[in-house]
Amino acid sequence: MAKIYNLRLIKQRESYSLKQISELLNVHIRTVQTWKQEGLNIINQDKPYLVMGYDLKEFLSKRNDKRKIKLQSNEFYCTKCREAVRSTDNQVWFECSGRNIGKQGFKEIVIKGICEFCNTKINRFSHSGLIDSIQNSFEVVDFGGLKDE
Image 1 (cartoon, rainbow, N blue to C red):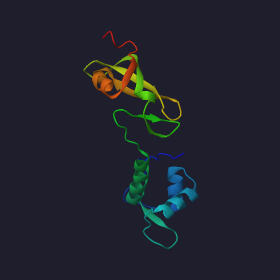
Image 2 (image 1 turned 45 degrees about the vertical axis):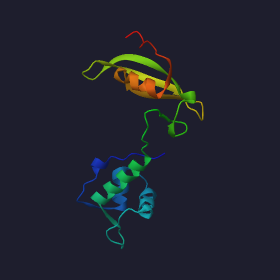
Image 3 (image 1 turned 135 degrees about the vertical axis):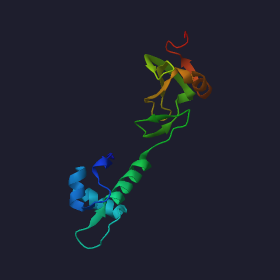
Image 4 (image 1 turned 135 degrees about the horizontal axis):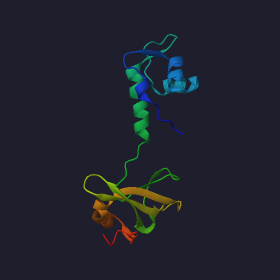
């Protein structure tokens, strides 16, 4: 599983050896050597290999950005499939936690459904102010206590 590294530990204008990088980010030296093969910019090709801090930050942030998944208004993220999916038959139900969100006084709601591929429960968090747009995107089966508001 991919790891998110603390990029604030890396100083932009400092050069790091591969061993220093592995100790700083608490990863194995082979991991850093793999990053070198994947395109981490090395400032000198003689040993010890040195990497500038800003190059390392840029490389790791690009790796993190590749894993992000942008969801459409009618999609959920399935943790089992690890991708954006829709609910089976586009049917969802609400559960209201009762917590207030923001200054407008909206209630926190959880939109629940079933993954169309693996039949796993999927969730998406929202607020009561978006109920109309949610009803346009999904076929709502149960309002979970929100109908009387």
